[in-house]
Image 1 (cartoon, helix red, strand yellow):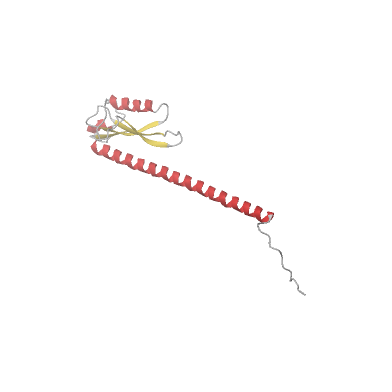
Image 2: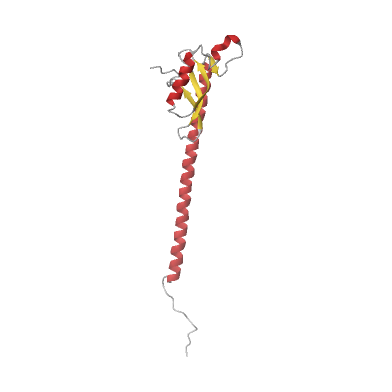
Length: 160
C-alpha cells in the first residue's frame, strides 16, 4: 500500500489577489518616480533661473562701476555742500538738462514709479546718465533702472 502524504498540486501563475497587489504597487512606484522627476526638473529650472539672475546682477554691477569710474562727476539730490559745486545738485535750476533727463526717464517708465537716485555727467554726452529706483517689469518688485544712451559692446555710448 502506497500512501500520499498530502502533496498539493502546483499551479502555474499568480492568483487574482497577487496580480492586483502587484499592479497597485507598480502604479505607486511609477507615480512616485514620475513626481520625483517632475520636482527635480522644476528644481533644475529654478536653479538655472537663479543663476541667470545672479549673472545679470553681476554684469550690471560691473557696468555701473565702470560707468561711475569714467564719469566726470556724480549728480545727487542736494549736491555738494561746497558753494562752487552747484553743478552736482540734481535739482539745480541752472542746469535744465538734469530735469530734462529725469523727465525723459519718467516718460520711458510709462506711468510706473521712477525715483532718481543719482546721475553722472559723462564727457562724451550732453545729458547725464540717470539711475533711479523704479518698478520692475513684473510690477511687483523694485529695481535699479538706468536711463541714458545705451552702451555698445566696446563701452562707447550709442548716441544716434
